[in-house]
Length: 274
Figure 1 (tube, rainbow, N blue to C red):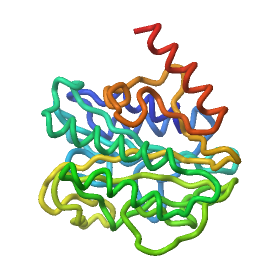
Figure 2 (cartoon, rainbow, N blue to C red):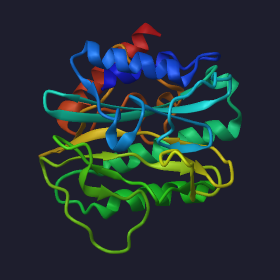
Figure 3 (cartoon, rainbow, N blue to C red):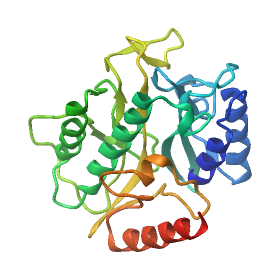
């Protein structure tokens, strides 16, 4: 899934359509012996989701060419060797300089609240810590978190228990345990977080036209923390929000000893090659 997402992100350039990105995603998935999980899932017609600007999630790839300054979330899930892997990332068409300050703040805040919540995942922690951490981080900055969609358990089944809420839940939920596998995927909006559903029954946009951003990993809880099963690889790009994160600078792979060691090596290599 990570390899396919990195490939898709490289195509997020002015003049390229999200349909073209979808075609590349389908081909790359099949080349790797995987099946693109979204295709025909509850009648979803494409192999990935591309959510541009005001689209919160589940955007269906189409023929609109991307433009400089667009922000796009590409959401990739593949089914390989009996398991689903699900991840998404933001991409800025034209790069950092093509994006206005508020757009940069939106993506940075979304990334930071996501990493902040993942940093707290470990055995014995209540699942309600995730949503509270996200909401407490974004609210003082003037952003809102979507309540209509949530993260989810994943494995042999695409979507399963538990539900992962990205907002404060004022009651105890289940306890996180080693071996749990799930996604955290906050959707953060400039303005209203209430979704407007299109007639295609999939595309969810902000009701006020404000932009939305999202990141997602498939996570495995270990005895000593958590690891991103969809973490970045040696050839994955380092984005400005990773370099400038107030929570943890550089590529994030998890909190377990193994994940920290791999991330340190990966980030050292990124610095050396810059």
